[in-house]
Image 1: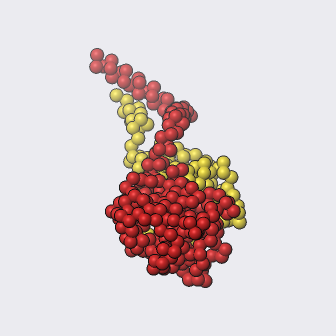
Image 2 (image 1 turned 90 degrees about the horizontal axis):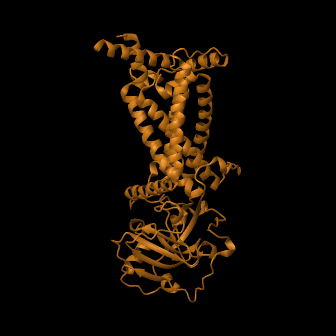
Image 3 (image 1 turned 180 degrees about the horizontal axis):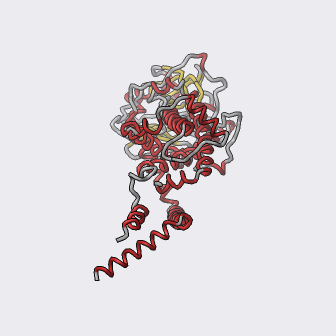
Length: 254
Length: 212
């Protein structure tokens, strides 16, 4: 009986050997297996297109975490000289230059909401009366280009402290006159190069660069720098953003 | 019991790394790298198209990955982890296992020229695909160096403020952007030559898939 089993085993091996010795056959076998595997894989991929998107979104959130972890409050973006300023400075928005919102300075009021102790609105003269600072930094766009500009205004960390913002919260959100909205992490809000700017190249911020005010952060990409800000709020509830909700990375750090 | 038959069958059914041209870990890393490089190149082309700084030259959108800039960036910032992690482990294993020295060194400019001449004359032999000729060594070392440059310049584009020393080393944000583009172009050129060469010597493809 053992002899029989042994014979069978030998026969099977011999046959397998014959099959596998022929390179053409072996290749065919391999190709068939690969083809089957591939079609199965693409079938799965097509059926789960939604989950591929979800996976990419998750990785994007993971990248937010990585950027938050390596963000250092004392890491400063390089500063430049007047001679380095890009002229003309590019206009960029989700609409054309002529469609930039016109805000009336006489009636303008900056609204505050959320976890802020003193939520009284601010007029432009009140903001202009605060200590001002300016810096020349590189604006890096998510599209790849960059340009150097000079922005002046109020250090945002000073402003947040003055209004009694709860700086233990995670997010600061912005609502703008053009319907744009975005939000940033608190460490970046408190970074000393983050400015609530009222001027561009020492002149009142022009309409197309964000009049009456733009939050300028040289540590973040352009789409994270909101223009025409109407409302600022502090929250622990993730607020997202106009581009971020469509797929741009939320942290958008540089 | 027929020993030879058993031996052949066993070798065919259960690959033994000691007898393979490319060990399993190497094959896995090669293909992981291939996937990462292809996905990053295709999504990178879409990102490049958002600001076409090479004389306005546009890469046809149908050749790109991501559908739009935001989608391309998501693919790019996902597969960068695969490229970085894979390249790091690959280089560490190569250096510390001695495989790097064994496979890629020594390499002299003279030996590259000699092998390049015999290659152009059609005499370069691939008798033993385990051993790389000088042109192969140079090409693979170039691919490794190019990936290092791609990762470093990519890091500057991603985190230019947080990595000041790297940014200055690569000449600032805008210069790093050019480096990244040209390193990509060279990598695309490498892929074309690499694939053509592999097709000309199909044994190498089989070896990189099945080990032998």
